[in-house]
Length: 476
Image 1: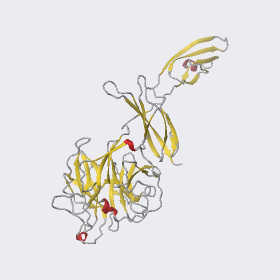
Image 2: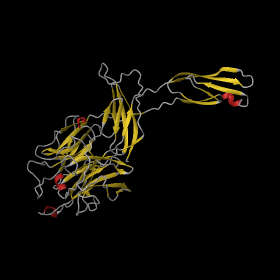
Image 3: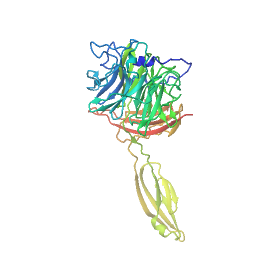
Image 4: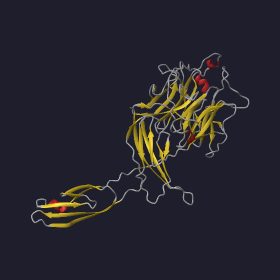
């Protein structure tokens, strides 16, 4: 299906230079080919569903039937493989007999509630489709789940026999539908489009524009809960063939696409990226081993699902002599001694202590007529304690390309023998150390996590704590 879908794309190579930006160090990612791949057929477009994975394959549906098009391309159907554990997968089988077809059933997605499937298929399904020389087009089709069965597919309202639509993906909140198309008015090749769910239907498709699309092909969109758009493109500047890129949605549109690193990308075709619910794993397809196969990646980057927000200790106080408020017409002078070398005068006094500690704040009252001093007229015993937490300083905003410094030296964890300060910058990169420098390459909003660890105890348990801070990176 991937090769068929690409046949309509007239790829015109322009001298377009796109920077090769590593999203994260390649040694932080491990990949493995999944066991349900076949040697001689193609598997692609992995989608997680319940306790397994759904994917497309052009493998034989039986030992007798071997369906092909007049162009000798194999037909794709949708399959399912159950997941037994983190390493083992069960035997794959046709996902649903209701969806099995003599026509291509290609890249697909499910609605957030799992009750609808949107898939790429051939628009013409009548007798004309079987005539030699007929050029079919791809469209998006929708089937509803009714009990255990799937309904007869209905055509997406924006399908057109004059051009191709395909590779649908619906955001987890059901708000956006992304797809690829070579409809007129694009940047060239095939472009990515978006529809928004409004008043019970999908809005007219809107091109994602030159920030995402190029004169080459943009295919296989995937939109994460974090506002990341992953897609594949064979634009100039990649590693070869189709490569996986990522961009982020922000208030100005989309950030410049970033080329994902090896081993996610290679000199072969790498496509149909799918990020798992576990932040450290996901799936993609590649023909780096001759045929299209599905790979699983595991990121060694540490990132917590939740982190505490940092507490900013405030040791500032306002002191008021209440009795003096009632006797403010009397000739007295009020002198405050804050027990840290600082003093102040007045009925009211504001003071900030620089360090935690125990302070005996004293008020001396001076009779302006007699000069008599009443020492320690009022005492306030303050015990100021620093919050026990990991802590770091970082700017609230910076510019893309600017190097910023992050400092965790004010971390206060009494009794901890800290073995590691681990930084996750929310852009696919990480670093270690009490003090680090960071340069964000793309504008956007990022949530920095600092994970502080102690060495394992006698039972092998690791003590960890985590704090986070948001930073906004702006375009210059």
